Image (cartoon, rainbow, N blue to C red; front, side, top):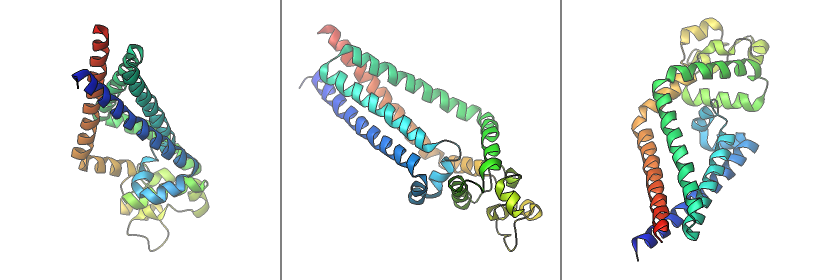
Length: 239
């Protein structure tokens, strides 16, 4: 078997796996969007904490569609030896790779900026719907229970929320171990429970080696796929 044939078969198999993974992500994304509560029950506080900052359902649907398209282009381009499809596959993968690097740089260098932007979006939403919309309230409760945190920043995020207006108190999670009575401002201030964003960052930093390893693995796979697609493209030029 020649090198070209071997890489062609490898490219087809690799992109078939990407296509299947895309289908799974798309299915999970639709499931989360339709029935997010059951998703939280299965995957627990990790999934619920993520849902505060991104819409997991729509994110998974978008990622699934992207993988479906990439997998199809890679399979079809390699199998049919189509230069046009191969260069399209390479271009899309290159754009994704550059975007990932840019996102990583922004996340590392501009963490405080991201916190301010999320704060401007999340806190008003808490004050608008917490205690009124059961699904959102349950998501926040699961997050605060799982991460032992309170709100995005602290207990003051719940001031003016439907829950606070009805109960004249903060969620019990904001008072930590001081839960003998209602969670008043004085008790919540004394408890000093951290905000969920800080707790989430703490968890990410604790597992930085794992996160970095996974990111490096994805990057290596993307580089390998781009290299193989460009090799096939160049070899077709010589054919």
